[in-house]
Length: 247
Image (cartoon, rainbow, N blue to C red; front, top):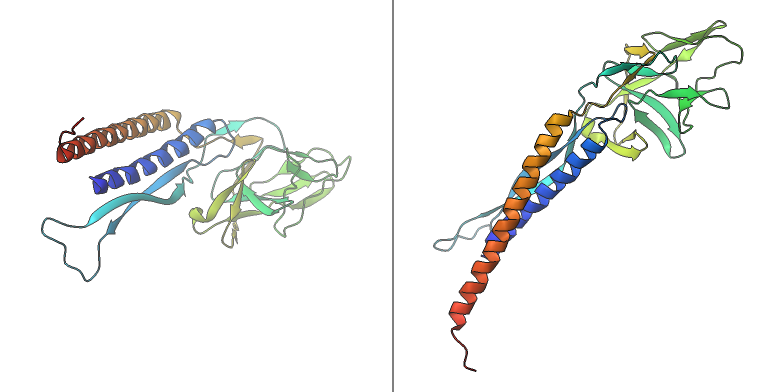
């Protein structure tokens, strides 16, 4: 009975993790450039090595979650007309400079910072292909951003927006504020596809996520009921073994 309870508890922990991740996806359904996360599920077998199982015995298989994987499917574009709203329609991420180092993002809601550079709403400068902020001279006129990320005004070319990619999206971890940190080296996207005057929306599919939430919650409740029933059976078995007590 102890083994059965341990196995079910391992499944409950994984189910709880699924509920947390799905809830986070739903909470970010309106976050520009957000990429949905999904829980990885795996199993491991607890079996003594070089020892034969006793009669009626066998191995125990537990469930666990080794991590999450990130959906890189592109979100829908929302046309804003704002010249500093940018969207990467192909592979890759914008790079911005933060106090903790370079971070990646698909959220192209940029603005003109007080120091004349292009940056995020929170003040992180957008970086060019050389890793430097893109400076906009005063009175240069309207900004134009080409599909390859080249930024120009009436005075000429100001720089080219740096777009990078990662070989394995599982190396990306959330860094807060819509930013991502890569735990592996990034590679420059040589031919980026950037749209000016538009924002990429979240790639979360609300109906799909709500359906997954309902299934995960039902699964968790079913496992909880099984645990409760198993505990009741254990208590009944112990009472029967001990027999009636004399008062």
